[in-house]
Image 1 (cartoon, helix red, strand yellow):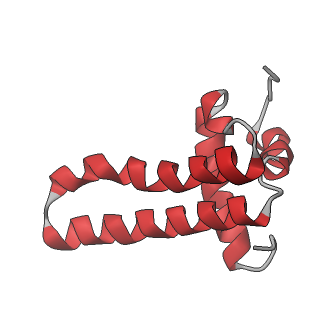
Image 2: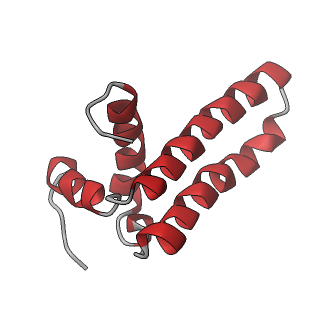
Length: 100
């Protein structure tokens, strides 16, 4: 397992693990659906549904990795940096810095 000393050092590796556009698009879709689900939980007051939120994001992401990218998700070896990477990549996709 490669050791990274900072998120800045990790993020180029993270992007390299999302080179396939379908994988990246599934990540973006999963992240956006997580945000929609979080808003729905807050609006409805049904806090128990928070338990399902991780399944939404990770299902899309892992399908992208196992089916399209054909690699192991970075979440397995670098869970915190990978979680941060999901949101940075989403931001960069939405702002046009990363293609999707």
